[in-house]
Image (cartoon, rainbow, N blue to C red; front, top):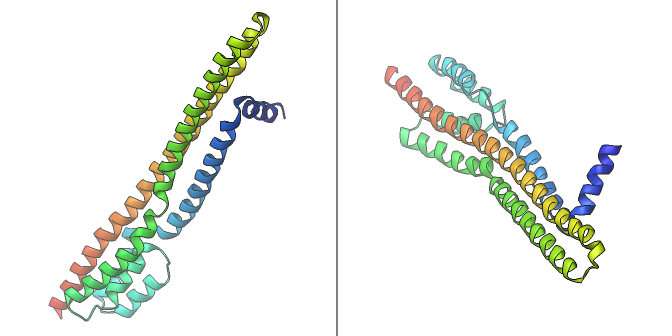
Length: 211
């Protein structure tokens, strides 16, 4: 309980901008939670999926490969499924179907990630505003305060300046770390879509040559 009380006192001592920074952090945290859930649902073990699809395609069971892709809501199976549905058509038509689905899904992977950068920047800037506010309070109070109270008044202004800076930077660092992790995960999924779409095209082309 003493730790909670210390945190509450820390927020109170930091002044108005502490609450603004907390709101920014809450917004960033909400975006992080939403993105973690969404990217987790879009991710899948690409090599295992491709090996399974390869067995069906080489055994000339395209419908079986489509069923495998239909069993998942992840991004990669949805893209590959669109190509498999046109397996008997020309390579250009297969590629067009894959590209159309990829263009629909990829923006969903990167959706709201820029908001995290914005939140991190705002947290830092509001922290700096709090610092300036604290310094202004200190100088204004020193010029007007009784000499015996100057040290106390100065400590209040310095507390506002330092606390808002600390919270703003702390919030920004946490949000930036999560942004980097989520952006890397989204990039990994996009990379797998590009890689396995090409492999699917090659596999379907090889199958047609054999036929």
